[in-house]
Length: 317
Ligand code: BDR
Ligand code: CA
Image 1 (tube, protein in one colour):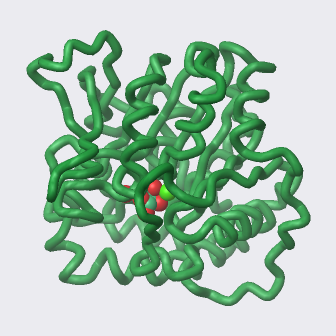
Image 2 (cartoon, rainbow, N blue to C red; image 1 turned 90 degrees about the horizontal axis):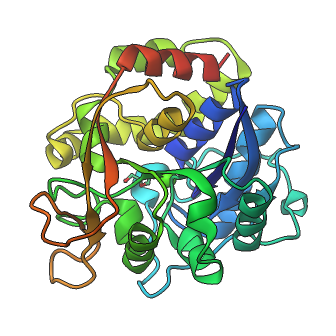
């Protein structure tokens, strides 16, 4: 079985990613670590437990992580994910935070990776604050990982949060910088433009959500606001590259659990801009090898959409 730690800021697409992981019998989720991001940390914790409850998997350990970025000002993505992070649909039966583990996310990450050295795949679908703090505390952590999968960054200076910055990187540029600099394990990246260019047709999304299962009902409800936003004229203008449904975090997670999902990728060294009037948080891609970095990230380019559809379909069964 593949051993995963998922670092999330649950959000609608984080929720989808968690559900895809839970549906795969060949995956063992060692823990879910929570980070500030789409919504304040308290909501992220609650949302993560809500997802596990719908899937009947409250046995999976959930950990409280960093509630703010290292240096940047806190920001959330309420416009898209809803103020509560899951589409602002009331849930009177949400599980209580007493179900959280006592240990904190960063400590748990370090311990789980140490106890399963060489086996853990870390999937990060949030701002990278927890991962940055973890490597500061344990510099040997990256070499004990099997691989790291990140949803974040951009390759064509096309932003979704600032003119040229993607949300997870803009929400904590210093953390993203540290992670890309220090995690020398195989590092796979699902960037913003990659997810846009590999979006799924809306017609698939409609069929997918039409299943009459509890999980499909839940997904339909929590994704209603973001689906509406993603189909609005403004949003299409913003991304221009994507005309369909791109559930960003699912790409990183799905690639981590199926090695054949990505059909084209490119190895390039990357870094993060920390200054710049317009460019803070933008990922810098060293196509001409000026940075002289030994470690290259594996940037995803193309996905097998039929496989991805199957994984999403299974997730709501
Ligand atoms: C990323 O930002 C968040 O809003 C999503 O959950 C995803 O992780 C996309 O830029
Ligand atoms: Ca996310």
